[in-house]
Image (cartoon, rainbow, N blue to C red; front, side):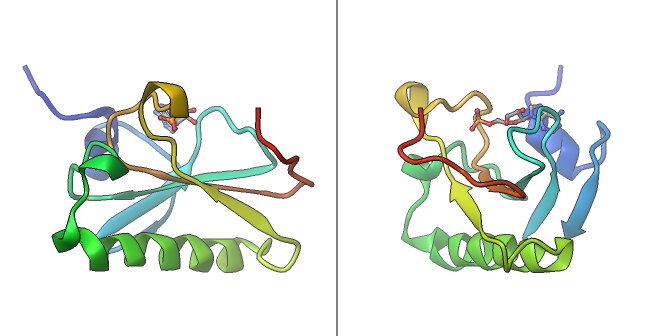
Length: 115
Ligand code: AMP
């Protein structure tokens, strides 16, 4: 039985997703249950479970995820109107998939504080 996470399977194209970007380090795709008109996920190919499990050796990769999120927002045409980047960590953070991912949300006015 495979012990890959759901998101590793998306990286490896074993399960389908609507990809908008991929490179040697990361993949970006549309969230299956969008919470905004634009809701994308940017994930590393490396299976880091959550931000709390990243370390100094991941510094360049983490920077790449953020820069890729900004590029995706520009490429998809909503960078100028604004967007929010979110990383959920652990139970109180609302994490449901144990593979690090950056949520990119845009296309509407987002509220603060979040629920
Ligand atoms: P989190 O709750 O921060 O762990 O976020 C996990 C996100 O993954 C949620 O927004 C889900 O809607 C999304 N998700 C779960 N399964 C899939 C899938 N097969 N394709 C795309 N997004 C997914």
